[in-house]
Picture 1: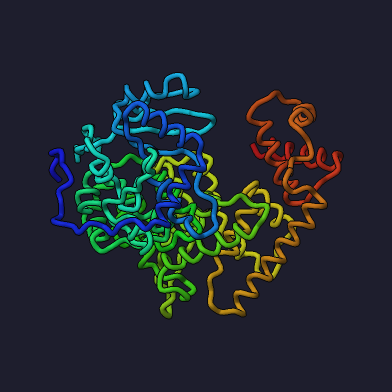
Picture 2: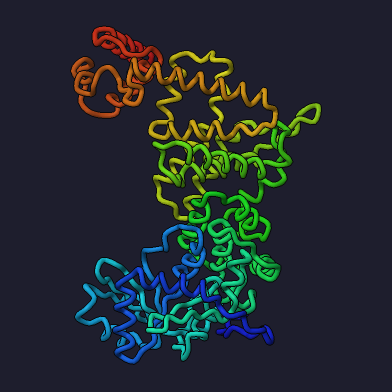
Length: 503
């Protein structure tokens, strides 16, 4: 790939988009009118002799809300102007409660006005260094030039904050939005070569907005997928997580895998496509994993007491079987097994999520859910002892509600009788957990003796031996349930004597 800076090359004459319908213009104007801050901003910039326009996602989302009865979007607002950064600061002086210029090298001034945050960026016509992905900032001279550098046509629309409230849509973003089509303002290969992260944004917009990328976009993503390796892990993780947090990420994940983007940043997901599930109910483990994800999201949304969207649950649902490719074994009579894939999978999950810079608590939670997701299948028809139930709850810890959802979602058999039997069996396990929890407070299982009493009984100082004794008592508590102090003391002393004799 050339490292020369590039300008977006025109792809040939393009017919002008149809005019924006009056009803749509009115919808976008209302977006301005509902915000006194935007109205006042328009007045201040106009008085100073400058243009200022609302651009990007706010305009797009207002159009999506048109006619649906949904409220117009609020939140952080992106603006563009012909004013240079120093002129923007002058317009805001004495009016904004605070301003910040961390992005001023890129032409962006941030401000907070009456509790609303805005970012105002000077028109730009950047060139990109395709080695580092960093733009060579160049000020633009027109709104159309600025919109031409945007990622997709649906984000390349603007509405003026001036008195006329003109809607500008030079690349047909409105038509694409109505057709649920994803296109780039210029050539897709140029856009993605300039900034490969845009390919992951395309994936997210499939999930978030229900858009379908056109053939040119898909072909460019496929050709340039290796360029995603230039993007920092933090940015990749951010976009991937935003994709998963939508209600129906399946089609977006299909695009992620089919274009080869997953091969670059999450190859374990792509590897699932050819691994046949041992139950032979799915053409591959990849399809099974997407089904588990869909079912986990449904359970999450149906639980009024659950966090939603739940990133940990969704990552675990998608990745719980990534240990299968490494553990695949062909057995007699055409059977396929994946013994201990949960152990291998937990390690792979930890390694991959750490590489993607997920927070440690997320990494450990997803890894633990992956490790535990098969344990229920040893429950049989309820033969587990109370000790086994206690260990199941204790090992899950505060992830128990998510483990319940993951295990239930992992049943994707089309055999209704088998599915009903598995559901009833898990109902039985949850009932036993509830009964034991009421009797023993399983969420706070501790040894029957604390560290001070252990040291007093065994006449030892703080140190490693106290920890060993504590773990013995914790295992005893899990095995036999709560003990009277005298019984726990007797068991501890007997263990200590046996330990000394064996050493």
